[in-house]
Length: 424
Image (cartoon, rainbow, N blue to C red; front, side, top):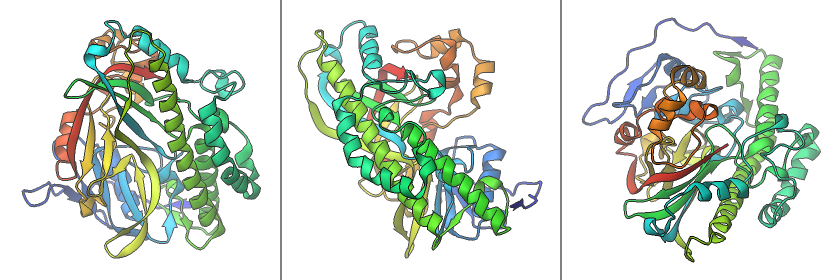
């Protein structure tokens, strides 16, 4: 597989107007429509977007959300509609990553004065983080699988077995022992208060080790296919699988299975968190309300847009059809939002998946101290140590600016602020 030379200069951006709430830029392929009014977009992200937009199977244009930033394979915060092809690296390795939130009947006055015990109980209830290189004894995996993940795996196992019959390498690693576990990085569990001081539980995770394995396997397979057919690409990570090939069919099957695993993973974690809260003697009896959301923001789906059935890859974006409920989290020290989609067709009915990083993890660790992080998360029961500096609020864009930039994509239903945050 060869890569094409890239032009050195980036094209100008046509800024949003009163009649057009998104910016537009082009580079020889399909246009990019970017909802970035008032938020930064760096040149590397623009280059990635143009690389994707130049592929021959892009449908109409590439949409970029206000949290857009550089990613591996494709830009995080992008929506890519394709005809008769799929890019495994655009979906990535955290297949089905997303959010779940549930409102309880508790209110702020029901919570204890110190929330340290609440955080400790959640940390005990849900395996999180990673140790031993993810091998035996990893603190982020189950040793004895509880009831909820066991039931979920019984439904998922037949589909996984069918995938492994065709691709035996997918068997090698964690599967059911990651159901109901959090992971690392930007994954989190939070206890939040909404604008009426009502208590919500919100969490963020995906398909864990098995999703990573599926993503990595098919990304490598797509690269081998490009080499076999001497396909020229602007970047190796844009290797694709053409519809009609066995690998295309197997990947679509595998990615949808991983998305089901991710959803079940979030449901199992939520069950464990709610159970832990119900066992606390300093909380009154409570119930869950019918206000609940469980949405992917890193996934692919068959959808109908502009007269054609296409595969839509949302790489860090949430589906926001008219009436769809979604979740847009801020950083560890910023507000989060429950939103309702407006069905904006030019975004392929999508919105942002969060605030979006404004700097790399390495740069955040270099620039900020534990004291900076502690000040930024003042009043929140969370980790305040060197290991979470890369997730400090200052490493992210302003969630207020991000929400303002996508006012034509979603309406705000609830505004949440976290009082407890558990990180991997």
